[in-house]
Image (cartoon, rainbow, N blue to C red):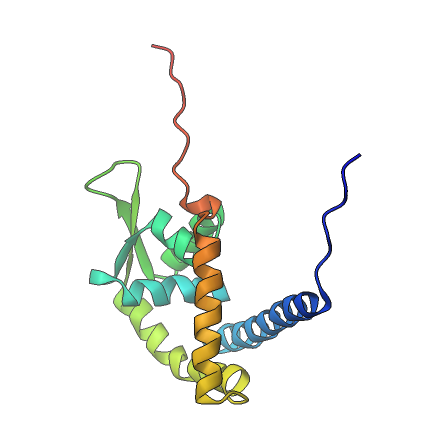
Length: 168
């Protein structure tokens, strides 16, 4: 019989629960604002915001999925909703017929510009208000290391698709 893996220390458990709770509370508050002011889900806002910041306002669908850490099928659904609203366009990639290019439209840019000020205000109020400048620097360094460690094993959305064997 193998020994059970050791549990988390009280400090690790406390840090884990605090991180999960802070993340959930922040996402809930931001999502509430985005839905009421922009009729957007948090994921849809992330898609639009990443596109607004991307060169020429466009990204491959798989790069978007990796950036927002969302499944390819889930992102396809969300992109379809945004496309129907005229906030993005989707087109085949000129470099790879299997890839889809997603581009933000002028309406998508306008919507991000409209909801962004309140989004920033909520993040400042909820996340950064209780922190000092040194706290923010420390938090950035710690979360950056953890993110980089976790990104060393890419999420499923970023892994290359398995090639199917085709009988000739």
